[in-house]
Image 1 (cartoon, one colour):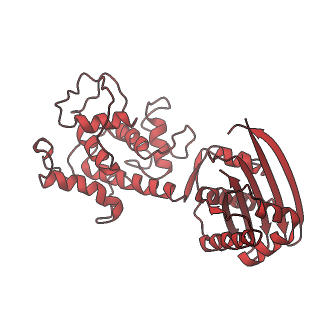
Image 2: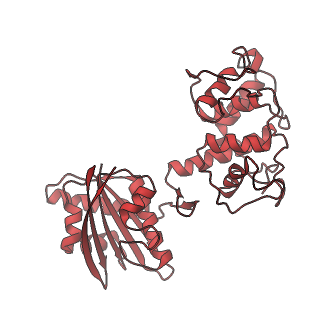
Image 3: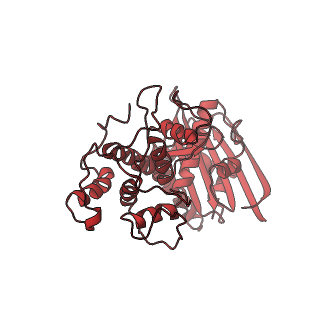
Length: 359
């Protein structure tokens, strides 16, 4: 058990309050590929795989030319996906499949996908069979760590509620990585072509880039990805600089701006605006430590300052420093990290959230 200290404080142009708590805790459709970027960084990695094949620059048994309409086998698709992920083929996993000899053209690529959990280690992997749309949905979701759940906005009419890949297909459709063959059909048993796989991989890479840059986050309560792009990144940076100046004056170590904590602050500030409240306790997420736990943020102590109706970083920091409870949070010497979220509501009022943590 770790002793977790939570420190909360509120500042508003017309309201002020503070509270400190102590708690114990353990720590379009898929045949349309118009979105493919011909020479972008995102598509370059996948195109490299195809170019190597077409230019005979890989092993002879992997050098057959792929055409855009070429229907891919499961082995060929594994080769392309591994190339796009840019991972080493090294693996110690023992393959159970009796239909995948070590001499198979794509043995090492398939073994790597099994090692990564993208393919299952089962008795039959069918490496030379054509890849179906339902199967590629599962591979893409696992390749790019898309959260799969049963609560989805999109559904199709050509499979039933018990279809084995239903949740994968619909979760990918919700984040716009995969589309149907029409508005109501997915055609799960149709085979996948090279151009379709290129499109799916590009979208998967773009999705992963958004996750890695903290522009979206999976909300375990809503069962959906929510936008978390920092529209006021310059203001966040300025608040951190001003806070560290105050800590320097007080001879306290500076705080490190934590992008994940920035994201949590943005989620909180969006929640206050969307649900029309101005408190530390969200009617939906609970207290800040509940929010942090929900979004898998690890910490040993956590603090929060909130404010509204201030129109610049300088003004909001001055207001926080003028309040004893906020000042205490800002100058607490056990904190190591800081995150800042800012958002403007529909009436032009700015909401501010500042989170602190010890790591």
